[in-house]
Image (tube, rainbow, N blue to C red; front, side, top):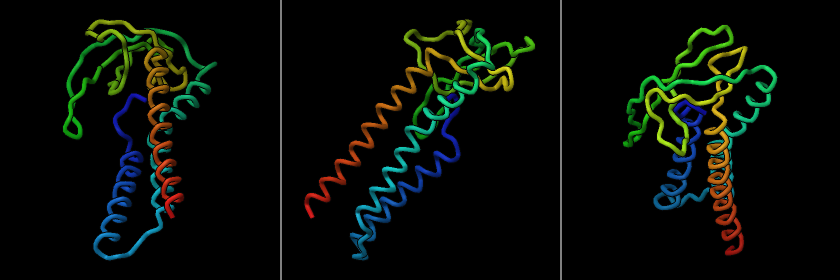
Length: 170
C-alpha cells in the first residue's frame, strides 16, 4: 500500500473517465446512446478495482507473510514533499533491518498515524524474510484498509443506486 498510483490504477481510471466522457459526448452531440447498463457496469468494475485492489493485495500479502515475517522497527530518516495531480503530500524515507540485519531504505507515500511522524521516530513493522521490500505497518495498514473499503462500499452503493433509479424510471 506504500506506493503512489500504480500503472494499472492509472489505466483503469483513464478508461472509466474516457468511457463516461464518450458516453456523454455521444449522447449530447451524435445522438448515439450507449446503454446505461454498460456505463454503470464499467463504473462499478472501475470503482471495485480502484478501491478494493490494494486492500485485497494487503490481505493476501499479510496471509502469505504470516509465517515468513519478523517484527522489527523502522526509523524515519527523512520527510520530504511530493506533488501529484496538483496537490502535495509527505513522503517518508525510512530505514529498517532485513532478515540478515542489513539496513534497507524505502520511500513510503501513503501512511496513517494519529500522531504526526517526525524524523527519528521508530514505528513497529513486519518485514518479509523472503522479500525485504514487502513491509506491513500494522497500525497504518489496518486503518487505510478499513477506510478504503468504506469509501469503496459507498462508491459502489452510489453506482448501484443510480442503476436502480435508472431502471425504475424506464
